[in-house]
Length: 271
Image (cartoon, rainbow, N blue to C red):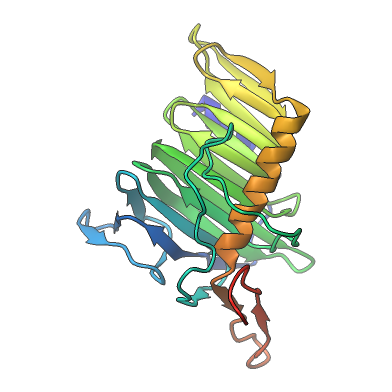
């Protein structure tokens, strides 16, 4: 409770006038994965499945699961070969390397990749309309394994928290990797972590781009400039690969049907 309170204090909480449940869409699975809901029964997980608060996702050995977190469901296009990984080399951020090709813009959607043997629960995921702004409230529980994520810039009143067995991370507009052991790597933006240290005391640390936190030593170290550049290129390639098979369609508005569709160009293929 103390840990959560420290990180919660960094974000103001707005009173919600109109609360909407967020949607977690499974956009790709490499290997095997499963999920459970309030019935505590495990079900097979497939691309296109939509999940929400109360659901728990588990990736199998040598498997990954890619998710998009949004206020609406994402439509998954099953295009073979699009965004497939090339090679199996692991870089300093623990991410499989991709062929980046030419520079491309990062899509504005929140994404999460579960690495192998990872258990992630969605505790809360809502959007609130306050009139002038949209306030999002995301609370994830990383129970085992490791995740890679990209969070677009959120409003000042919004919060994005990832709980871990020994602490909690508050994330704002960033690219990051988190481990259930408390390890954190920040590639872009900043992450506020509040954790129980090796001496048993609770401490809070702000990590900037290029910072890595080691829970075994409670030490923050810096990536070398060339390591950070390589890791960022690799991370952005993964983000683009995740979006390459997704179409996000707007939901109906209060004044009628909004038919606007946003198409994300694939990174390979002829279209």
